[in-house]
Image (cartoon, rainbow, N blue to C red; front, top):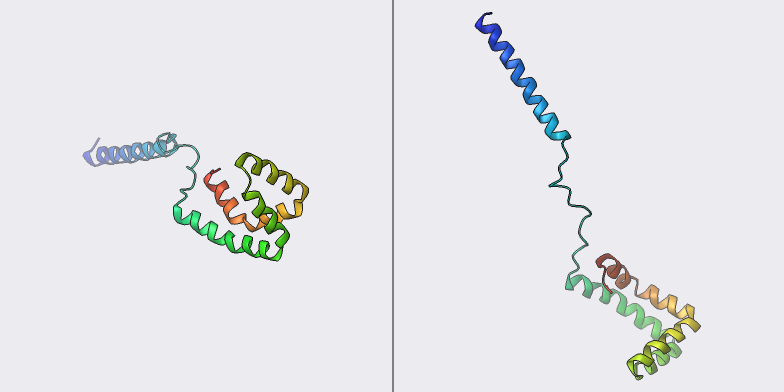
Length: 119
């Protein structure tokens, strides 16, 4: 066999072997890259402040438009913590429209809590 033919066979063999190794590398699982689900979003103090800033004027506007609700919630704040929680739950159960309106007003905070898995 001449040197030219032998060199051509070697060149084809090298390129085929190189192509196979690239294909095998692409097909091989990349377990070091598969780390599972993406981590939870990083919730910065700025994001929390922005969510609260979005909610505050909405809650304030609702309470100003509904002085009876404002008065009830103000009275709840004067109660001992354990009693306050029980009475607030009872109030919102008895007034689901108020609960829904305030929940809607605080939707930005709620969304951030869900996104950041906060309490």
